[in-house]
Length: 157
Image 1: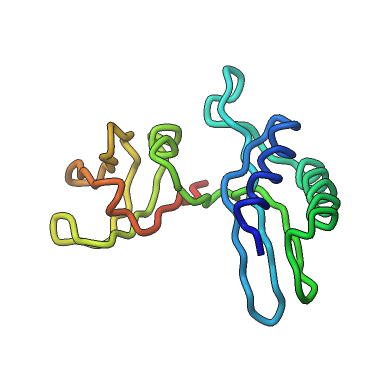
Image 2: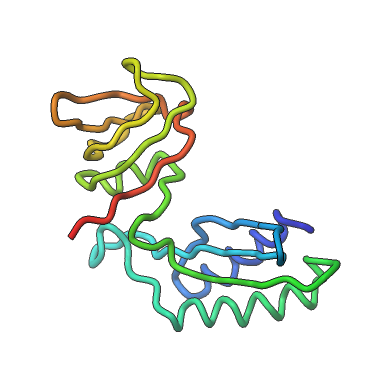
């Protein structure tokens, strides 16, 4: 499989519709699955980004299906192509995500402990350089971006 070529094709298709590719996952289990997560970048009208609709996902899925077949980007047994939005509990993958979602509640899992902890649940307080700030009830914690193993927003109602 040519994951980098798939990403490039997905980015071209998404960009043509005013979206961007947030992430691509390839999973092999009972079935082979290629999952593409779309995002709409921040704008003046939507500072935290816009919503991804069902029609947006359908458009990218149809376009990618044609490209992937024509360019033979996934060989072998059949696979499932799934195109979706990142969801309310979206992953935080880039330093800019921590700035973009400042003020939102998030969970961070670390590779190495910071202040004796490998896990934090608090409010994002931005990112400067390579340091992510997260506000806990008691105080502010600074975490090196390179030390974050996994992070995602927390759904609040």
